[in-house]
Structures are given as C-alpha cells and as structure tokens.
Length: 165
Image 1 (cartoon, rainbow, N blue to C red):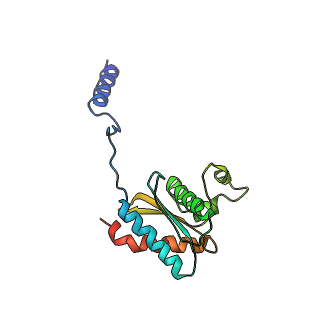
Image 2: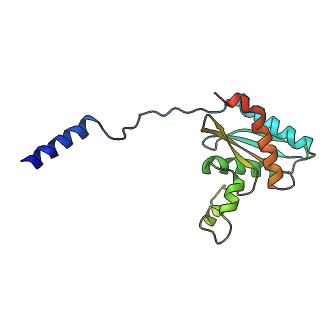
Image 3: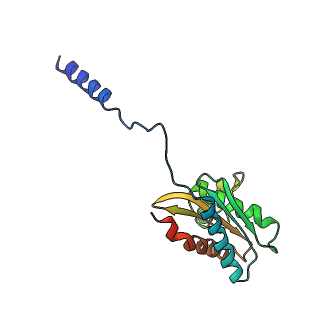
C-alpha cells in the first residue's frame, strides 16, 4: 500500500512539473547586414595593409552567407575558399585552425575533412557576442592560413565594441 501511494505521488509530481520543458520558439542574436559588411571591410582592409589580395566571407550563425568581398586581384578560388572557411567555422562552432589540428590523418576526427563543403584550412573564425555564436568570418588569399586568420581576427576586433551588449 505504501509503495503504491509513493508511486502515485511521484507520478503526480512529474505531471505537475514537466521535466526539461522546451519553449516552442527560440530566440537568438544575429549580425545585421551592416555589421557583417563592417566586419568584412575591416578584414579586407587589414589584409590590404599587409599587402595581401584576399576574399572575405561573413556568414550567419547557421552558415548562411551574409557578405562576400573579393579584392580585385584575389584569385578566383578565394571566394569559395573564404565562404567554405566561414561556413565550416560556423557549423562546427570552432576555428578552422583548431579543426585542422584535430583532424589530421589517423586522428579520430579525420573524417570531417571529407564532408561536403568543409574547408579545414586556417582562416575561419567564429564571431561571438555575449557568449553566443552570431556568425563566422572566413578569409582566403593571404600566404597561409595563419595570415588569413590574422586578417579575420582584425575584422572581428574592429567590430568588437558593437558586439558586446
């Protein structure tokens, strides 16, 4: 009898307070088109000041393209590479340099290099505001992924004050 009473009380408590109920709608922050363009311009400008002709892509938190800028002498391949880096950073929620390090041949994560659209080369960085992912930026065309990443970081730094809320 006591066991049945405890069981019934437990069931009633569970029904009264549903565990882990989810809201029917999600809200999130996103980059405005103007801020995405400011980010791309700043990254492009930083690369120009270093003497690099590059393409810069900015994507939203889901990997959707917001802005692409290509300097006039940047190679034709730089547009798709920058876009791929930005998409990869956003969808994996980490920098492409970090992904490169953890996905070397023979490593557990090596398979991500074969995923359609993934570009596992340095130069893709996530953009965060208030601890939330709001987008990503990818740069291609500088002499190496570390130089691409430096330009991407400069772009983020240029808009940092507008990201904090």
